[in-house]
Amino acid sequence: MSESKTNSRYDKFTRAEKYTIGIILLIEPITGNENAFGFDIGSNPARLAAAHKARDSGTVVITEPIVLTQDSDSTQKAFLMILHSAKKN
Image (cartoon, rainbow, N blue to C red; front, side):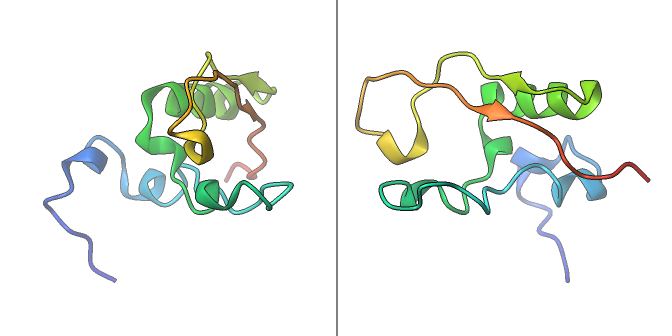
């Protein structure tokens, strides 16, 4: 697999981090949340900061108020609860 050298959004991450940023692969209920499935939370600064804090602290972290990906046409605010579950090497 080759990596594009033109994707500056990911340039600040190590090769390992690029593949572990946080793709949403599990969401419940799926009905009404289809647009969030596959979303990379690392593409949003607030979500990325919370993901890194959860990873580094080993605790559940709640994001600052955000507009959910699946509700992008809404002005209603929500939050994500993030728990990093990968094992450290």
